[in-house]
Image (cartoon, rainbow, N blue to C red; front, side):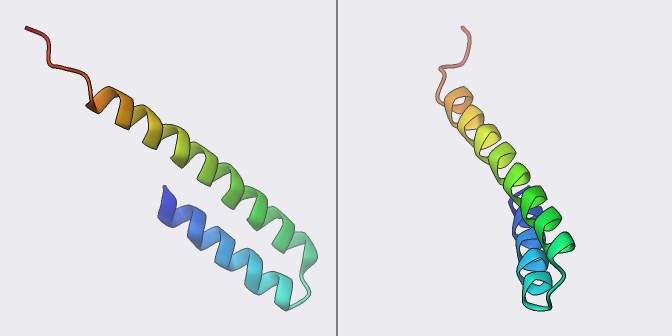
Length: 55
């Protein structure tokens, strides 16, 4: 998930440098959404991983 976010961020940055503002905006928004989803899943896995196993 994080790799997809970084990929879309790089695509957005390159498109922004080339003057393709529509593609750059869309790619950076996708990157932002994927990064937020990654953070939520990461935090959930941290919380769930710290639980003691059921007896």
